[in-house]
Image 1 (cartoon, helix red, strand yellow):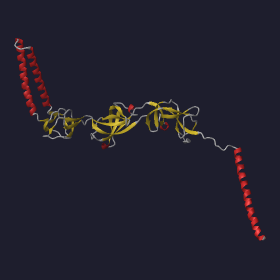
Image 2 (cartoon, rainbow, N blue to C red):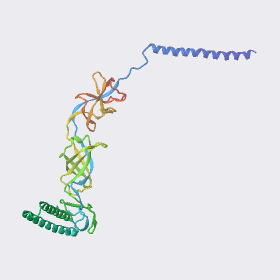
Image 3 (tube, one colour):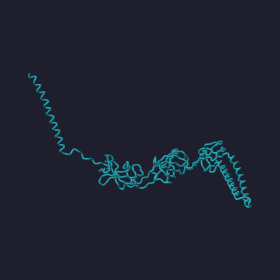
Image 4 (cartoon, helix red, strand yellow):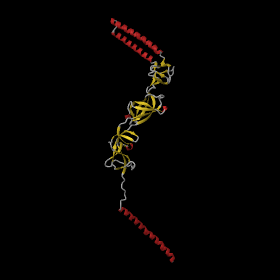
Length: 365
């Protein structure tokens, strides 16, 4: 009986010991928490917002634009016929050089010349009738009205002769200027309707190229300014050029304008249609310049964060200009010597206090 009771007593004491230890541990933990709360506050001090600053200073930016284009002849004319008919003579082919006034095309003009002969005979009769009526009017045999009708018939006959003479002249087509035949689209014997494209004549002594330039660069370019042209087919050499025309409008889709550059002189081997690259150098003007990293944009437009004397920043709306590498012109919105934020934008807001740091220590907060 005693051997059976002893294990029961031991089994009841062990759970009791555990029950006593748990409250002791909890009290110790609570005591520790109370000690921390009675000492230094647990919350850490808010860290200052670190930013890196730069100063807006006067500077000059000179921009070199490299734009691709294609060479074309400055003068290119489509030769078309003014009169329909059968082409009897075509003296030139592609590549042939022609001189101003040289005959290129002849049409069969026999019918028109016959009509001209008829009109000339009618003119002669009209002149005779007009003189006779004037003589009879002087003697009182015809009225003034008869003399007027004769004068009208004379003018009509003269006009008919001039018309046919012009049409006969149009049956022969000459070169409008000295150049080279670029296209030949018809052959002798063809019957062509009026205003058919027969030939194309170009002047290879003047080659130009059209390039598109950003609207930000356009104000710095001027007619007569120098440029350089590299023609891929002729190697890496740069050939002198000059701006001859700046188109007055800007493409609203691409925000670019068109500039025409002429090769002066034309290098040997250059031809219309060749691929080229144009190097345009802008003139420089003095503006305030800041690092490009300072430039921000939102729904209201471009702006920078300007540093204030009370260590806060404000939103300063600006108007930017030419951008080159890591710098940008500020045309309006800042004064000389103003300090702007260039790093530390994460979480930054107008009116916030900041702490300027050196470039090596600055980190986005």
